[in-house]
Length: 284
Image 1: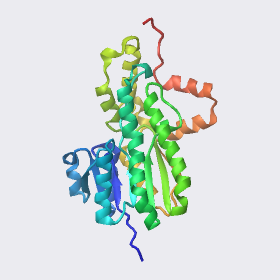
Image 2: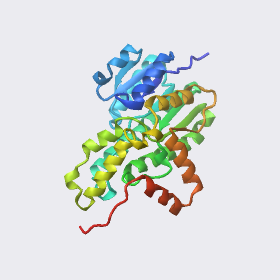
Image 3: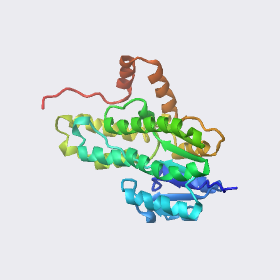
């Protein structure tokens, strides 16, 4: 009888959700391969029992090397957690296409690369889990995050298609839909923003940045969750006999995704105007 590998490969472990997920998997006795572009940045995870790999999800060679390392040691990647992601903030007109391409390559194309690489092993052993960390923004878009929301819509679409295609092979696909999470994602996006290039959008982009930061450290934080909450949902999706298609995490996700389902577009837009900054028309 062929031994089934349940080894876990987690992307984006340098902070936030990925770090918490790798730690919690390891503490529960799973064989965990924690990854980051710079393994030194996650050296402490080795003390938690994780095995460390260098992985840049935007580099096909790096992706193949990481998967090959797990396959050589374990026979197959049993659970792939596609978590690596970046955000870019600002009015759509002001976000450079170079940054948009990098975001798609990190958030969506990296997920697709790794999923293709692990699938032969999962199919061969007739068991596997692909857990994709999407967002509530995979069902609607926050203004000021158009391109980011587009990547999350893409993740939702890929997850839906894979769930259907892979079911006959014993491979399950689950989509995690966090709402606001208290992670460094927003602060990293704010630090990269080129405020001097905003022009007519300068005031709006400044308010978008402040709003994004407030989601994890301000009045809206009451509707946010901790990275550990998302990690627990990921582990549930990996461990249960029959995972759900979607896992909503954080009060903001449950409220806003329900509202998006029930409200017509104009009513939902009106709700968003109460929650996020609204542009002011200026000459430019």
